[in-house]
Length: 110
Length: 253
Image (tube, rainbow over all chains, first blue to last red; front, side, top):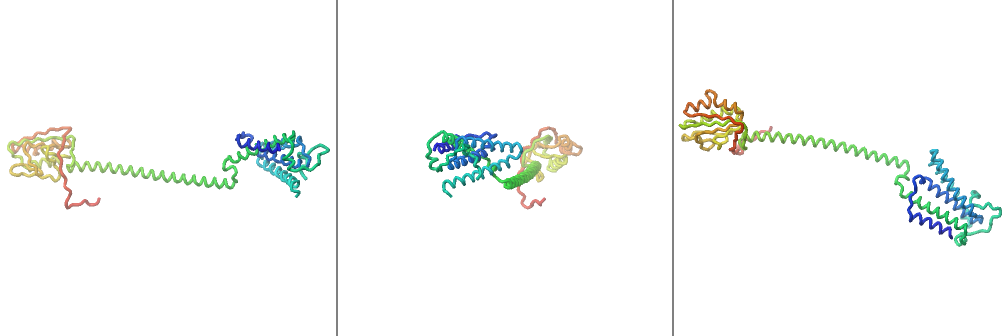
């Protein structure tokens, strides 16, 4: 329950605070969001599997975001930032799909 | 199954009981829930910020490259057309300017022609260097032919405007006749002394009066006398009224 409330608080804060993102961080924000989404769906699936562990969730969340940002940063330095962020998005998207598929099996038994 | 490693417990004895979404929502608050809530808040915050950023981004940021190329082409085409229009309009402006210059030059020329003709026809007053010829005629012996000859001599000497006794303007059509011993010029009777105001080169005009056998001699031969005064400002103020020609029409130039 608290998790859902936290999500709502974050969304509302984003809507009402209208923060401006520093230019240096702008390319990494979408990647970070997708990476965090991947971690969240992974955690939800682990919870439904009965193997959820908050420590693991925190580590996976933070490391997902950091590694995704690092890959994109590396790509930017190498001049292939666009392609690498596309690759990261694709990989994370596939993981999200498979996690959601597992969650779906838990919820709908199908 | 991929992603087994993700967010799974490393503990050797995982709690294997099945959970449901309902239990997730109704779950009792604990440390784990709190941490998850904080992370989810961060995620929601970042997602909303990113959505907002994307929406406020430049309109062309999401456009495909082909679209951008097409857009650029059409823009440069429009710029070319605008440039061509600028050239055309500048050409038109130059044409108009030169035509207006020609016009004003023509107007100035016509003005000068007009003033020449006005002085010739005596419809405006005139002022300029010239001579004043005063003919005293105590015997009343100066006749129209003598005066006419004198005026002809003045014309030959380049007189531009001639006036008799400050009352009659002498023009091309001026008539001078004797009527009962009185000089009648254009219907106006004149009496001695006769004063001829002439605008022209003062020296030449004076010569035209006093040369041997000229007006001066002729007046002297009938008992009168002539005085010629050269001046830098001779004023011819009397006007001649021009009647519109009844029969003649100008031929096209």
